[in-house]
Length: 266
Image (cartoon, rainbow, N blue to C red):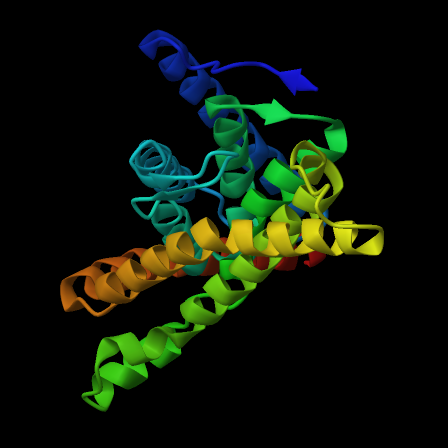
């Protein structure tokens, strides 16, 4: 068993850790841009994505400390700690969100790390927090948003995809924690009142119930507040403006690349 204790015992350690994680995230953004350029994929990985990512990461990390309810063997209901990262994933897509979710996973791991093996770290930290990036698979659609505006429909109707994204995230994280509970944590629970195969089923049932107690409310709170934000016209207008600025930058880069290629051919 590897119990590192609470690494963030002093405020300065928290600041240092956050700065290091932001630096790692920035490096991953740069490396992604370099790899894409070599493959001929033209996208702009600018300060906008990095800045929004850092802000959402800081907000999510701060909210993760506000626990509404904690279970005795790990797991808690937070004040929508997934919300900022979820919105980033929704607006910036799966590719960029993987980097931010990886950074969030590192912060969560060092916030209160407790693992029994590398495999338990995979199931309790790596997969669950990277699963947030699944919200970016069905990402923001400018066409749906503009269609809602043109037809005078509530703007929230253009964002149904984010609820599907939260559902995917919940399913993957829930199954990952349940599997970890069965494989690594059930040995610490006394199931001696059950006999033979029933003891194994007791461990499965315990893990299924235990993990849904905190994870379902935590996900519902984040998804519900996301709907509230996405129902707000001012928030929608701000994010739409930011998104269009990103698209325009990508389009300019593609045009410049095309012009350069044409010049080379001539």
